Length: 358
Image 1 (cartoon, rainbow, N blue to C red):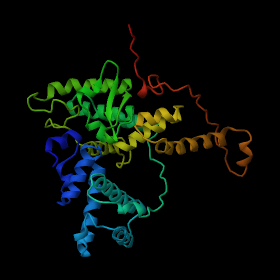
Image 2: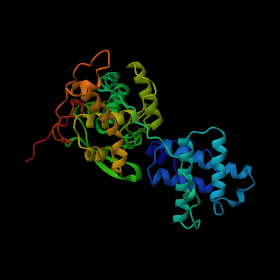
Image 3: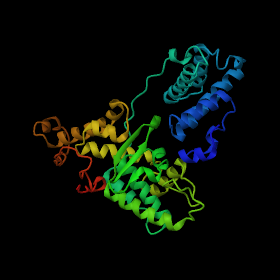
Image 4: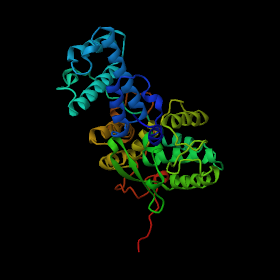
């Protein structure tokens, strides 16, 4: 089983695994948390999905088949049950993904002969354009935490880092002091599947981080707080992803923004603002830690909409298409995009100070 200190190390809580006592499921969830480095949200949802499938087999007198003799017919029956309850396509697709991943794990470890979930059809999903904040909204949010205290400086550093480096919440809470290079102003991040990447950090974020680290060393008794973790709660324990989300909702409300703003909203904003200012898609893919470029391409839909708006407002021939409109939009200045350099200033928030080499 997963030790409590390992869960704090990854930003999880032990309640993540408390939804079921089925040993095969618990073993799989441990694998997701420790080896795949999945987020608390994903581990919790997969645990719920698998526990519900196990309960479905119990209710229908088929639990003796679990997990070795489960067929695709039983999985389809489970999906049909949730379809009748009005579950969304996204929910059904996630449950299928959970079962596919679970049986792939069992098959790879010689526990089952095949993966019955592979032949179950996944409902077609609409690609949702990620929600993001405008630059002015981001500036309002980032200006909300007040420095001068341990909590205030910590929260400001968290918001600045997520936006400056495009961090996932579990990457943020998993940061250790050894992952920070203050001289080079870069972070070593462990993403999904423990895949490591190095991201530059803007000068605003690094300044906020240095201020927080100063308060951290004076606020906590060194004998009592986690010596490795960068971000701690007031008790000296590693901060959790849930705490980060709750903290962000608090500051979003203070800034007059929707309270459903999440750490991923800031990550979406990071990617969108870079692309809007001419960053290369491949570079953004590397900064986000996406394995496939198709995952990053969702952000191009946002910038494509901007280009259409600018074209419609600015091109002389486009005016003919808008002749039926009552008012004509004012021309929108088109920013000239310079070649992207991660160490250059795209916006002040992303600016990285270059150090001279001997």
